[in-house]
Length: 133
Image 1: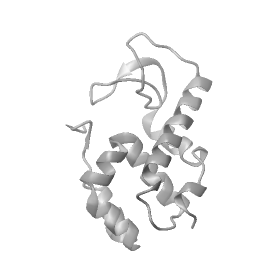
Image 2: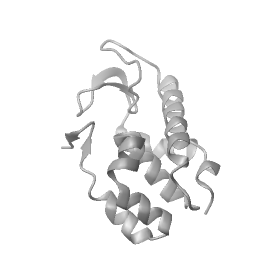
Image 3: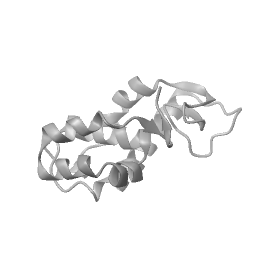
């Protein structure tokens, strides 16, 4: 187990890409947001195209941003799997959503209650305020 910030963004990249997929042309995600690569949404417009290498770099940058934003709310050492799960969740629904809309998840995590924390992941069913399919 390590401090949350000790893990690299790279440790979560393959997991997130496996779940997100990778599309090199812009598309609308289920929440209706223009997206490219493996879930990148910042400054994406309808006709954008990128290379796979650009997709990986955007994903790394996005994960770094999520990691830095979420780190101040994680007060315990975590396993690499816990780091990946938390970053993946926050990457998908937003750090603010995880912190403010999932208080039981964060309380359980910071109390060291791994089972309760894992159970709270099952209750998250939306992205961008919209129900996930």
